[in-house]
Length: 143
Image (cartoon, rainbow, N blue to C red; front, side, top):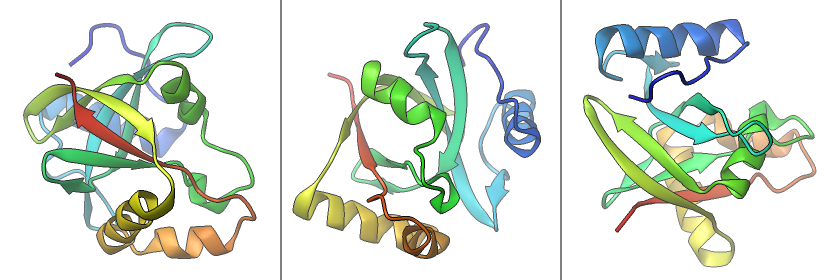
């Protein structure tokens, strides 16, 4: 993956990332027995590379990235990084590629939200915990 990317200060997130980096694959790394992918973002202010493990929501070669933060009132820190720097790297299993993220709305958001809830049902509960509409990004392969 990316040289010198920073690990999360959150213990369980850092542990997931370290396991992926150590094994060279996202396979076998899960949240509630659901698979994840590892996204590398670029810091909006720092410009530093940061690892972000997220739930695996894939459809036709594109991925969703859900800014749920467990239903808290604020967006996760990575949200601002992806808005500022939409080119990201995604590792799914041992496969890695460059993708461009875009925040979606309307019918497209609904389709990806439904796929995301199917992949990880707690997202539906997270939405009930917050008044903000949880942002959904679609990550598409960079041409």
